[in-house]
Amino acid sequence: MASCSIEDVLAKAERDEAEKLRSITVNKELDLEFDPGNLLAFDKNRIDTREFKDSKGEDFLRSLARDNTQLLINEIWKLPTEKVEEVIVAKLPDPTTPLPREKPAPKPKPPTKWEQFAKLKGIQKKKKNNMVWDEVHKEWKRRWGYKRANDDTKEWLIEVPQTADPNEDQFAKRNKAKKERVARNEYNRLKNIARAQKIKVPGTGLAPTAQQSKSELAQAVSIAKKSTASVGKFQENLPKEKTPRNTGKKRKFQPLIGDFSSEKQKQLDLLKIMDSKKPRLDITKAVNKQMREEDKESSQKSKKSFGKKGRKGNMSGKGKGKAGGKGKGPKGKGRKPQMKQGKR
Image 1: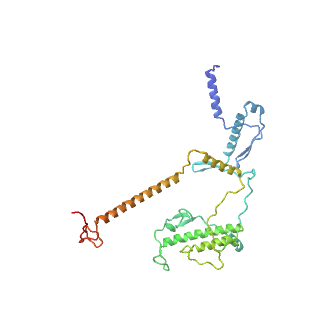
Image 2: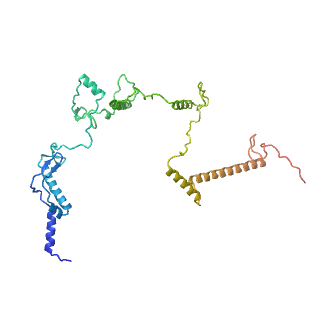
Image 3: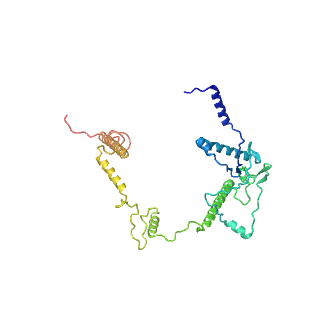
């Protein structure tokens, strides 16, 4: 291993430090052309091929990009600056280089119904001032939006008009009116979109279809019949009406000719199940079966215990009789037990 002196190490460290802290002044044979509006810089200087090969390409390109970026930043800081929220920013001029668009320019939006009416009548939109005077807080506030002036939604007391019902909730009435305005604006917006797309929109409700098919009519009749309290059991048939068939889901079969790969996979899965020595266990089915057996056993036990108690009570005659009162006989108190014949 070749020995290196302390002077060489220090010199290399100084070169590395100087490489990191380069000067902001960059010298070029030809000045760069700048477009600060697009943050572009055009370098027309020739590339030294020998230096490019000696520095293995990447280092040369990295150094060239650094120098050109430094020149672009120097050009930007020649522009007028201003301070915005404790940050100094430069005011970029309008771009001079036309850049191609990835997509075509957007088409102008079609005018709404109000815009068409305003253009026909010559109505011009007047620009309102955004700030208005708030009489309550005695200061200038925004006309619309958050913390707007004269905000009636923050009032805790509303005066009831003379023509209104005194028992009516004015707060709920105002909220309902606002919801209606929002819904009406949304409806008008959707109508404008439909008019721009040249889609026919009905005046009220949904647009009916041109002509319903036979199956759709039969389904509508079936649903109307079953919509009664008796689920259509006592509903009379219409004249010349056929007996409706079962309108449930039809059983779907696999196609005879189709995807052979899926059919092959199904057959292989079936053979795998048949060839396996271990039976296939359906956990859900097994759990349900076990629960049914347990319920059946518990019901049988309860029936047996109930039968034993009933027979025991009839034989012994203990308990309350039907006539009321306690007694040993089966028919209540005051009845003597019958004597049985036997050996004395």
